[in-house]
Image 1 (cartoon, rainbow, N blue to C red):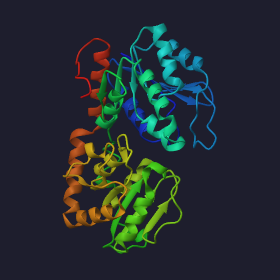
Image 2: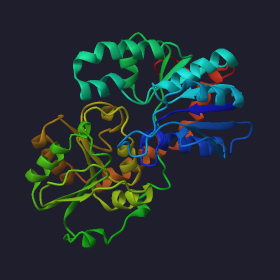
Image 3: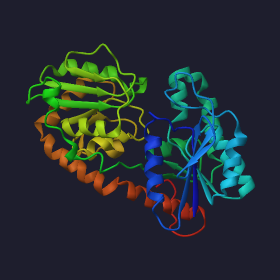
Image 4: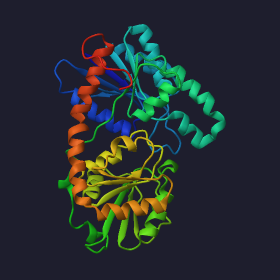
Length: 370
């Protein structure tokens, strides 16, 4: 079986989609009888270890992202590769290139709906465009042989737009990198903190939908006994005195060290389609305080952390205090066990293979939207 993934969501500092594709590429590469090709944008045509770059212009201020403008180069690479199945990882030109290649190759195409496009566009341009974007999503994803969504909330949005044949396919987490053994007992001293300080962390982009002002307000309410590390690009600079900012994209190993050395993850984002950073924290052996919104209600059980009302700093501060009053260390150990059982990348890739076999007409059919 030859599987080809195609996406523009792949850059040096990109997040969940690249993590998913890299993990998938490594695991499929060692499975007998399977070949995996990955098509991503680059400055020129190249190939190394099954990863093909296709020329696409860089986005200004796009942190390494490139936006394909020409369909033909992507379609032509797919035609040369002759895959048995194509998976599309974004809703832009590469998706249409895959559908165009399908007509030539007569192979199934799966669309993975990683991002809530209508919500992203409305956040940036206003609600006046929502209807048109929803119509676009409905048309595009209605063309795929099967559609995968990382959470039930995303799957329900697609089915609400009339898209059929939608299946929930969660992502996974690197259990080796994100591990309690990455804990550094010297981190508090490095930050100039007392050993008894309750250390919280948030990792990710400082984008609007992450609701970082809620975290900052929460920290002001919690006071000096608590300290928050904000790690990632585009972080705010004006923060309370009990917040440390690491305003840069950090390699996974560095984030894993910070995660495992903290006491809990704090996340105020209320529009998350999955929330990979939540799994990374749980894999690191720490519990989570997040908002009861988006996909978080699906992945944060009561044995792994606490959920609170969205956009409510007082409620989040109360949840943090409750967490530390109810045995956060035990919750962290339970969180680790939970991701080991449900979110190992090997488990995810085996589930993906069942989807692939199903659309190829072989074995392991699954139930739609489940």
